[in-house]
Image (cartoon, rainbow, N blue to C red; front, side):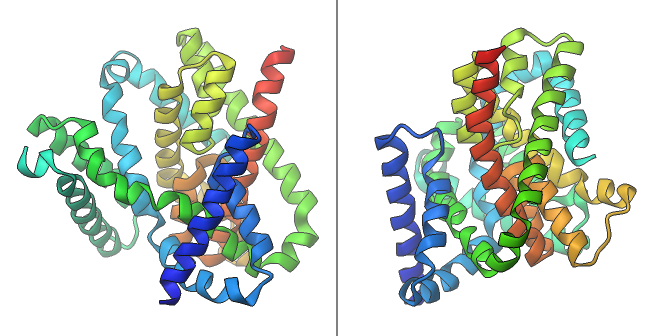
Length: 333
């Protein structure tokens, strides 16, 4: 019962966040506003206990919630076929800069396929000692997209069932406020360092993507769509629309960026000599959240609690900063 009450609180905070986002025309998504509201509400014991029970469950399975939107990459196979290699080069390099019909006709298919494939991918991931290349989100997306392509099932049919999993992504983002609340004292002490790191990391992400996209000769609107690639997909779409990019393509770039970050993080951190002590895990998490948004945060949550908490903070900061600064800078330029 505590878990259900916690979910109700998370949904209430998300709904209030959506209301404020739309009613006041704020450039931030409802779940991120909901996360900030949750931090205030956690002052109350009535909220704290049930949220703790639900947040721990949602955050431990956060990777699963990114599978449905990741499969959406298949809707842009034609564009990926034409520019795929160049797009991948840009995304990989710029991420390294900042980080260094029965069933197919019913909702049951999308829901069942997502759960079964993800559980199998997660089991393989654990058996392979959490090797970066075995990331369960990546292989779930690849396998499900392959199944849909082979069977002729369209993405809308799949998502009609998978949307029940995707729906939980909003409350899960709100739930990221819980580990931040648990570390509220140290966050107050480090806020200015974290803010500077977020600004510099976001600038490296967007700037390197734009520069590399221009160098390799991508079309202008495609280059603009790369600018918000390191923020979560819904925000990236809104930013791309404001600066003259292609919103749907910006969402694809965001998903691919998250996967590249989650896959390459372990190797890059090793090359950079980032340690495995608490300070090292904090650096791991903040870098992943900055470079690879929610998918990076999900990866961080899988390996260390401190890394996951700081990844969630970085994710929220990038949403706020990117939504404000990228459109502003493009207007000035």
